[in-house]
Structures are given as structure tokens and as C-alpha cells.
Image (cartoon, rainbow, N blue to C red):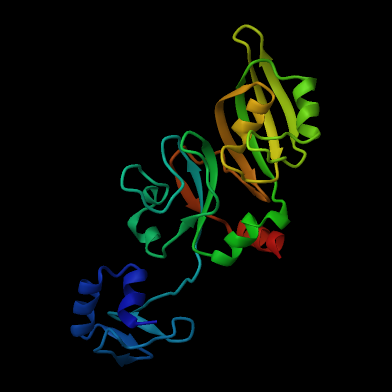
Length: 241
């Protein structure tokens, strides 16, 4: 990796400002002053310092985001705010991306990382990763819908979902709504909403609570995020092996 690119990615400013640091003889590699930004470095092995302070290299970053409604699960968009826009500048430098997607009007757990291998494994259909959602449904959900989900719901395009576990948390006869949890194993476009449409119900509100072993930290306010803990990262990696 080029030295100037490495320093820019680790938060030392733009390529232009990094170039000024190098010209000012403030950057050393293995205790030798470096004068060329194009110098190739190996961050895992080389000791790289700026003004005498060692630059610590981290290859992969993992963030848990409590995605709010109205934000799209993409890295960039010319019209809408994206989940990457919610990260501070420093955390955007590693080119992270959302693992999978949540619809624009859906909130809840979203993993953001630059670890492509882990993301691929989590999204692989062969892994059959459980995804748990909480929802408010128009209408009273009961045994009929629970059995339909258990027996595999067919979506409007003919896709047959794997059996899903539907649980009714509460019902409100007064306003004809139900609060439910559902665990699915795929990640089709608008899948939960389309599954309920298949049983003649409509989703009013949808929130993802978990994905595989990763569970939303309910202390995270909507729109906020945090790095995964070492245990959470270890659990994800063990799960995807």
C-alpha cells in the first residue's frame, strides 16, 4: 500500500495534507524519514510514525447501527441519505458498507463493515442466517397466520419462503392491530411485508432485532452506532466458519 494512501485512510487528512506531512519530514517508516508518498509500506509489519507517534493499523472495522427510518441501506446516493452518511468521517475512511439491506422505512439492526469475506458468509443462502423482526400488523394475527408461516408462504412473484416462526406478542382489538415477532431465513426484497401481504395482512411498522448471533443493542438510540465488541466479532466469525 502507498504511504500517502495509508495515512489518509488512518485519519491523517486528505492526500494533499498527508503530502505536506511527508514533505515536512514528519513521517518515518521503521525509524527512517520518508520523503515520497508513493513509498510502498506494509502496515502489518512496518512501524509507521507521524511526528514521533506510531500509527496503529486496523484492517477491518465492524459497526452496529440502529438504522432509523428514512435512510437507505447503500454506500452512496445522490438523492437520499445513506447509512454510511450516519458514520463520522474517520469511520468512513475504511470504505465500509452495509451487510445486506433494510428497507427505507424499516429500522433496527444493521451491520456495517469493510470485511467482505464475513459479509459474503452472512449473506450466503446456504448459511440460512436467522433474522428476527418485530412488527406492528394491521389486523388480528392468530393461529391461521402462524400455521401459514410454518408451512412456507409463497410471495407474489412465486418465490416460496422457507418455513418461518411467527409469534404473536399482543393484540389490540380496539384498533385492530397485532404486535408480532417473526424469524425468517432469507433476505428477499420487502420479504416480511410481502409475507404478510400473502396472508392478507399489512405491516405498519417493522424493526430488525437480530441477524444470526448479532443482537441489536437496545441502548443504542435510533440513528446511532458503535463498534462491535471483541466477543460480538468472535461470535460472528465462529458463526460464519
